[in-house]
Picture 1 (tube, rainbow, N blue to C red):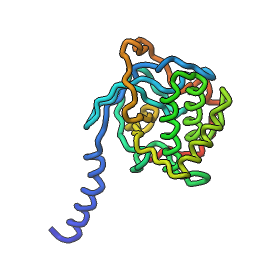
Picture 2 (cartoon, helix red, strand yellow):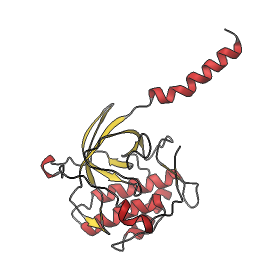
Picture 3 (cartoon, rainbow, N blue to C red):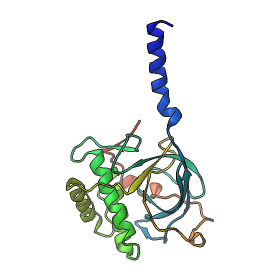
Picture 4 (cartoon, rainbow, N blue to C red):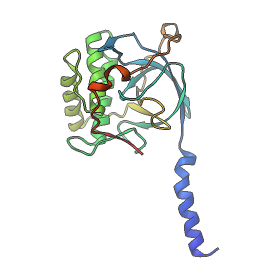
Length: 222
């Protein structure tokens, strides 16, 4: 085997390896959390299951992706990374003006933790949910008047050194098969009797709010 063939073979194997060895997870939405609705949409957290290498999870999942469709009881495949240690598989990328992708996911992780700490406060639940959505769709939708303040606080935390190492990012594969979801480690388990498993509905309100949330300063990762 000559050197040229060896080099081409090595290149081909290295290019193919990520696709072969990437770990994937099975995800399914099973409910809409406590059913809190704002501006015509259910807000996070939702209820879901995740299974795959080293993961067997039933509990809260938090959506960071307003403009993609997700339905209950329709499983999909996802890849997993960490909000504090991104690997490029995540759905969104920012160009650093005014924030980097790492800062955005750390800010979203900060908000995800805050959301789960305020589940008995529906106004806070709405504000945290829309603050997360606003990070990645570039909008300023703020139905309860607190999302913008929380978004600013989240970026302040991220710029001040906060790292969202306790938050996993689950990105659909293919990337637009479902919304992207955040899972806080040790998030509380869900009572399966509370899941609205008989429903099939669109999460994120794509058909309701698309006209007011059409600007997209961030791009889907290839």
